[in-house]
Image (cartoon, rainbow, N blue to C red; front, side, top):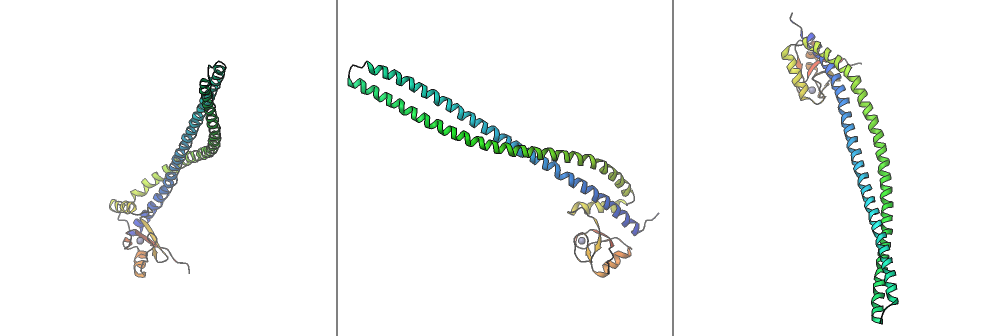
Length: 243
Ligand SMILES: [Zn+2]
């Protein structure tokens, strides 16, 4: 049976409607995995930062411990020097030991200053760690929600997608091969996946360029398949204006 242009256009419109629904399912799902991935990357970045801060704090604590030991060493040296000073034979020896004691006292002062600085740095790092951990917790909650959302969307749309694909299979059997490959080619070449559109408000529903009245009349007559002269989309009909 020879199918009429009208029925061909109807079949193509049906196919377009199914494909648009499939596009939408994939579009919605298409964003979410990316968002989940972005969050996972962000979380990993925060975790690395927290580990780095922790390492830095540990390093500062090590240097505090070393400085404290150095102070103890200096103090015992000073005690030893002070004992030696009791048994000197002349002023020259006494002065030399005094110099050593002064040197150790200076070392202690330097260490005390360094310890103070390290404590201050630890304080700073700890508040940075706290802030980062706070953001980390927030992002983990976001991730958990996104993952749930994704799981739900995938499970919901899987059924819908399967149903639409079956419908698509049926819809394509009603379209001759030559027309189907033209349809697929147009869909691939346009941004919004619309290969079949109507004329709306005197314009192509795909590219919005004006369609002249005579051409609109030809489209409405459905005697042959007419494509938009600007974008190449198939113009399946003219939407009636409401006056
Ligand atoms: Zn167009």
